[in-house]
Length: 159
Image (cartoon, rainbow, N blue to C red; front, side, top):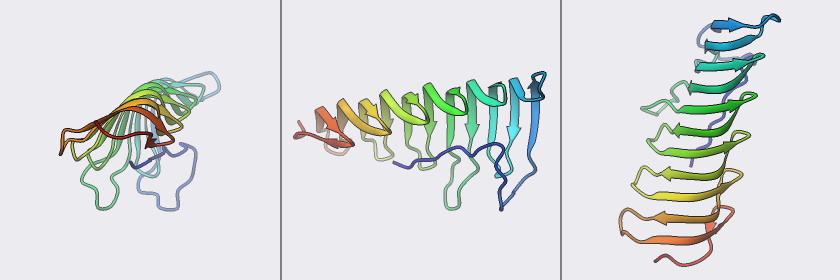
């Protein structure tokens, strides 16, 4: 499972691909506020809600395409102070997908991870790892493990 993090919108990049642009609302202090659209210096795009300069509320963040990948990574969901918080869907460049709950930019709570090989994990997450009650189904064999997970590893045998 690849982990991608969003860049800080104010951060300068040595490899600037595009100039930073922002279209949208601003508050009395000139900070991004309300609905807006930003193209970051590294080529990432964000369109959604801002509050006092931070991504806050619902938004869509599209990462620039990485070398060797045929797709961009993309997150569609809720933010709080520039971090993924609440419900959201993350599409990974390899075709994998996570749908579920986020807290402080990490998968946290209940969620489903769809692997590129057809495997599926549906269950609890903690600190970006499978942790708690969950079910992992192996597409190739049809076997599954339903039970407890600890820091990303199952704690029993597959059914």
